[in-house]
Length: 192
Image (tube, rainbow, N blue to C red; front, side, top):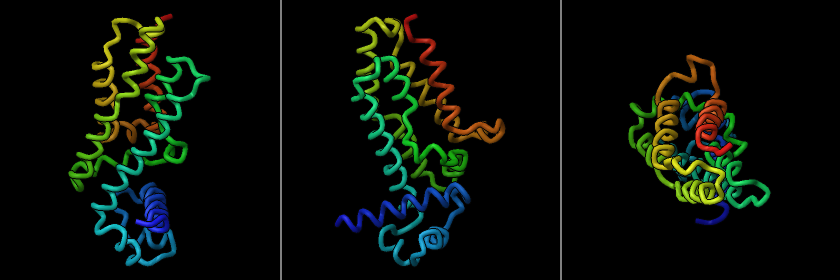
């Protein structure tokens, strides 16, 4: 795949996010083509179906979240608890406006894509675990803070937010809910 192909795919993925925020999973390839002022045929050259597009979108978003996590982990100006807090709530700025409430229908309409989201939430915790251990060694994180339980709590909370209607019912943005959850976790594990 050439750089131009990658650039086109990324532009399609970025446009998909814009359209997704307006229409949710009911978006069509025609909606994306209109948003980009290109033909549907051009999109179908890159993605064979909406399922394929959504599947690649999951990796695209999660890969960028991982990049943001790596930036945070490498920021020497932050103390370990601050890194942990930012890492647990890591979200690239351009995704802070995604309407995550619209992901709930994926569970029924695109189950393979939803399973991929679940897998991505459950993996890639190595950097976070290292920071927890470092915080314990520094005496900044409670020794009895169990990273396995914290991981389960965060994964369960995020899955509930994504699959339920809690956010919509309570008019809370996903990013705000994530930050509140992380605050509660950090308050519980940080040494004062």
